[in-house]
Length: 344
Image (tube, rainbow, N blue to C red; front, side, top):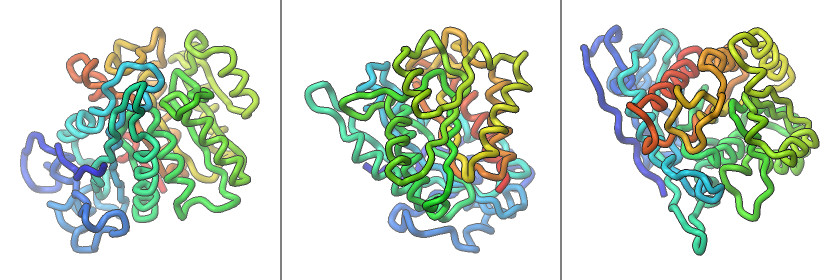
């Protein structure tokens, strides 16, 4: 189900470009015209539409889209609530400042997935297909697309949308950089939040492309041996959470740079459970150790400055489990960094 964009509101200090916050700059994409209509020059120059002239003075365009889905988390036996993530992320983003580099912001609304049960699974696959189609259109019309999750089942739709876009050809090497405590390479009867990267690997193989997947933050305590074996078979690269602490920052940066250097187009996915539970309590599976926020931020910075980042998503925010909006605010800051520092 498609839901129009909503939820952008916050403090207003003025209407001049020096006063703007995101809720004043975001332009809602016309749901009747979507997904094929790109912003007109008149819209791009309008302050009320989030135009470039009032949003950092450059031609950079970012599209946002939400995936209100808990079905993958439910199938993976996690704590549901991530379907409320897109609304919480918009709320946390609303009062953040428009700064140099923000560019034009457009919101394509949400794709919503019906939650099922053991006897009658929800329509996850339909929702993923719909989101993938929307992402493809957004990527073809904007410099950067950011997806607001949703459980990590969001990833299969994100990957599929990128693979179907004009950015990817038969010889294009897609790089997937996952900041996460989990591989999410599980074999299962139904797709879930634990299966998306295995699904992507299978699709890349079918397309005759090399699967390029790297993870920062893997918890050895929370991934079974079969998951490590699957990762090895697929030539996945990873750093554990113990290898990704503040003292290891230079090595983590080098790991990320080395991975990005070998791919043509980059997809960044941030599972908020990679962060310490004290920083990100509002997730399905809080971390026992986690990767410090400054290390995750450094990974994001490497991705944004590479010039290869086309798509990012932030997933597994569960507002029902959040403490004082802590996880949502952290996620919003990471999205702000992705958007404002993106280079293409």
